[in-house]
Image 1 (tube, one colour):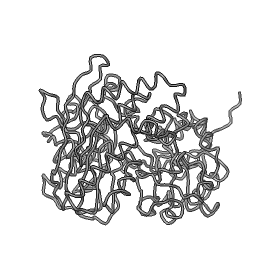
Image 2: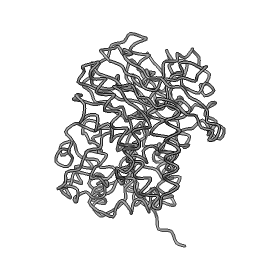
Image 3: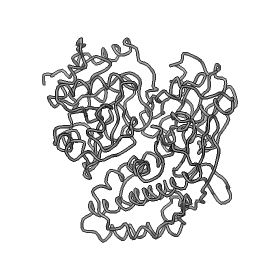
Image 4: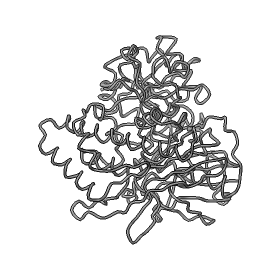
Length: 546
């Protein structure tokens, strides 16, 4: 049985194809259109609605046609104009339910508490523009049971033009993000800025919301008061960076306290030892660890595509397991995020041939050791390996990798390739066998969604990935999930004694992560990356005569 899930809302459109419960392929549209987040406002310049490229991409990977799909599922927050013509009727599921399904059905748990927290979910009442904002579920075997909801209405602000939503944790965090100068879906910048801040505004923020168990409340009046407060603070500051950092610190602190309160209440209801998170707020990897450390939950699982792109996974899996009454299997297998298509060696060579006058190509017998040696010499390596990963974080198949031992490497990488704000951290990846030696974390972090402290005696060994507060957004490198990446870090460890690399996404600032060999070469050639490693080929740039 083939099931196709399509996902997104007004942004982050995606498609997922499964066969008999196995995910064959999953991809975000942004990787194919090269338009970050595939925002609705960009539809006029990228004709997505007519071409839905992610669907065709999945069909091509499976070598089937649209008519061979047995069932289609989506979510009810999707932009209806974006849904293409399909040969069968599409079943539209509750938005938060598809988030919940995306994390529960890909988790290793047969019993779990599930929390979905984002900006807004399904429209409940059109007359008052009321949406779901927080959803609590309990997952048992195949079943996902609704056990709690928070709703909030939205009103248009005539002055600013943006919509104010009540009781939305995602919109609470985003509003502060916007006021301190960052854009839509850039909440990660606020999280990265917060460690530079102080407690200056933490006390004042308490009046801008209330929390009682899982009931989060922020009225329109409280949100407007918060906006006016932030603007006045920024208007009167003499040190804008420090003030914005202090405001980021305040909202991050309160987000963590809110999430801890909700998850404690969820535990009281479910008594489960396992917690599954989804929704855009679940990408706040700092808060995720605070939940694990400050609630009775013993294990936490966060689906790597927790934002709206992940709803295509949830829609497909819910449609298969629940609506078609198919049991879950293979719970002992780790969920692999590497769900893009396979590119053949012929496709690789065709792309390389197009740029033959600009590049040198090598294919050493032991390319892993060769690349590790280049890393020890300070080279910036673009690592393109196998199938692309889902979600906003590069997990080692579309990554830029460097030596974390060099303190200046963060600035070098920013200047030569990433061109982004200096306060934003770069992530460490660590061999699973040595994680507890370097990080104050025993729980695995396979998808880079937990931020532990780096042990004090190790911080000077890996300064390029040690953030201002001594933490690192770590990825646990598993030989089972990614043997090639594990082999590379292992080789680096043998040569240096350090089982850690710096990993950042293979893209330039403001661009989606690269998807195809052609994308990889374009990014490599226009930036100051030293080497591109593409499925065993080591590519360097020719020195051209002026």
